Image 1 (cartoon, rainbow, N blue to C red):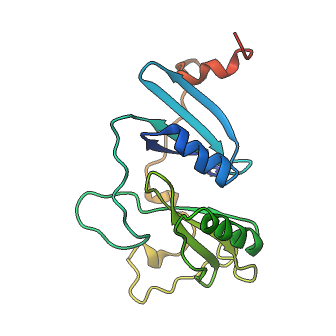
Image 2 (cartoon, rainbow, N blue to C red):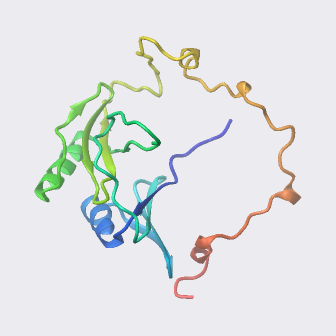
Length: 194
């Protein structure tokens, strides 16, 4: 069994890192915890929680996403709909709503989805964001529920993983063959200022 701890980071793109910093660090209060950069390359990381981050590459030629409402179907090549970030309590949700409105940033009304309460907005890059807080008495991880009237065949198999449906490795990669190649972030292992 693989043990996941969260999303290390989501990697997005922006044409304007400073505007992105103002929104994610200053308005949403997510610390800017790492920055990489050199000629033609920049990537900054913001901490969402103890386990999760969001990162942005700055690409001057990138264009903002066309505005698309959260969850509205589209045609053609597509993979990303929106980011959903969880806050601890309803009070946090209302604080975010009030802060966005105070800064003339569009934000939806609070929507009750049965297991979460949510608000919706967009960042300066038109990235659709949902902020949600759990409805405490509904824990879908502890008690999964399927309310699809016509679930897919795989959906009818239940909530538990079925690793037996995939080939399993005959043997793990031998220690002598476990090569790790250096990447851009090796600078984080050096003392600051060196």
